[in-house]
Length: 121
Image (cartoon, rainbow, N blue to C red; front, side, top):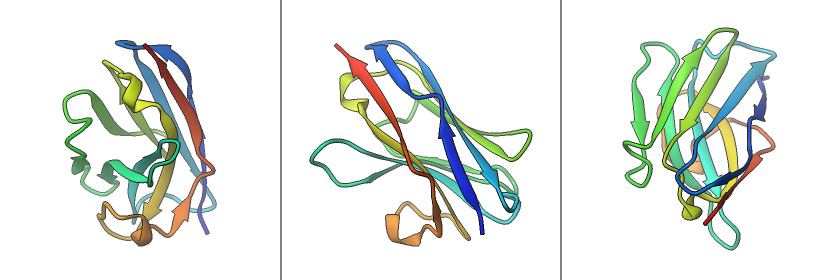
């Protein structure tokens, strides 16, 4: 079992930055791909970014490419650095882990509870 805990969300003005962290407990990320998804009010959950813990390959949704950076950190943590934030980035952000790279919700084995990011205009 892997337990995931997100942190770092909050309120920021458009153009600003936030850094989200996903910390794992129970098992290490060593054999997993870790994803960030987000869900805006009234919309479906969508893929944001992913990183293979082994090797470090990264993947991004077109909507965040060039603005967001996913990275592996010490102590079994994956961060999402979000720059040049837009009001349309407002959503609950979820960390998830699965056995291989995927950008689909149903392929993830473990989920965090989510954390709110609000970008004001």
